[in-house]
Image 1 (cartoon, rainbow, N blue to C red):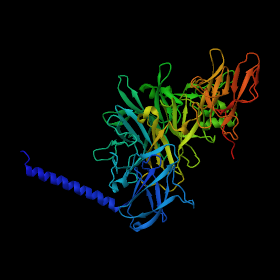
Image 2: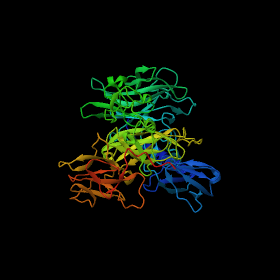
Image 3: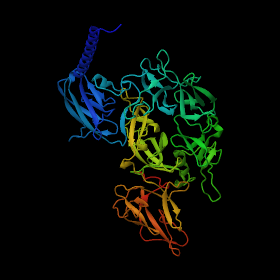
Length: 638
């Protein structure tokens, strides 16, 4: 039956009425609250996780659009002072040192304030939990096309594993909380999928639209319900190709009891029929080189054509052939180690050749030395500092940085392997200081690092890069981590944000991220010394800047000798260094000395002022200051 003119008119009137009613509701919402938005002064984007607190300790926390909606009746029609604070951001102080601002609070009113970002990385949004856009909803503001208040009932979850798998992104999280009961969540891995950017998925700067795996009654589906007491955790999520050519997800798993005691280890694989992980192998004793609790992986094809899975915990010093059979067989796992094959650090047996040179190699069943173990070996005189592969230090102060957890991926923009890691026992937080570092090879050397995110007595552990989100050829990268007061010593948890994931964006073209890189000595065609980057396989001669940075000078070759000069189209800088005439030199730098041969006229360059070799003499003046390498153990303790 065709619709009559009267029916059409009635339908239009109903739609108009609904629109008017909706508009009225939004208008009423706006009038019920006083709104404050906090924006990044450099971008104008709303900043999540900014705390605004009144003098009588009412605390408001901005949502993922930087908004707070205030409806406290005692505040209306009053001049109210709000202190302003946020991890890694700073509001200017007044003459008394107070950081905040007073507003005349009234219904329907709004104010915007700008805050300075100290972090090099930009905080974008909360990824998980409830009320991600709570204040935006209360104020009737438009939100990104994601669940703004609650998705699958998740209000908190532990760290993420993620992989691009069969044209979607598969996401998995640890222990998960819901509203119904303290133990009413999921302790056997929560999962979701989302579309890839460019394949109907959201641009990662906007958000992620998750489709959670749930049961018919709405409960979260356990993704890895392994038998046995206690939670199940997974690690080392990896996409491998089965013999018939089909991709399949694999992961390691561990069973937990008594809070943090591991008692069972194994391997799981994705089952398409159940949409869960199924057990492939299990062990009552921890297999050699099993990485827990939070290892991330990448696949890399070596020069011999063999493809390997590399395990980052946080550095990729463990690998296995990239086949399902090898992944499930721990006898095939190798560590990049200087220990004798088949031994562990407790044996303290280093692998040296007859000349005493330390032998690093991929060795089956042999763990790599951790930073702490290497430090202990150095203290005991068994290892020279220059023999390490990991000597992470703050590029500004030279202070040693101990990496706790993180991930490593190749970056096309930097043409190096990039590490995002959280520091263990950082200066302002025990597990909340996040660092950027890079190296020529997955196995290092890993030396200079720059802090990119800081927290004040709050944890942000297990940061995970998402290479499937990289933009502009890797110039812009994204990472997230777990924001929680656990392990921080801070008794105050941030409402809604605590025990959830927060996404950050980092622009790798920032000048602050120009780090000293390894330069290696090679011989030119006429046997003159030259220095190159990305040579690998040998010990670096020194570290220097590959590009010009403030305060550096270009070092150029004049025939066979290095000189400070002007880089031009005809004269390419060999590297950039600091001049020798600085009044104060950074603790991390050292003179680069020139040594000439008395007969051949050949020149070599060393950071060792006492280097000796037959026929060579040191020229009177060092040519420049370069950055110290693996031999440097940090500034003297004060």
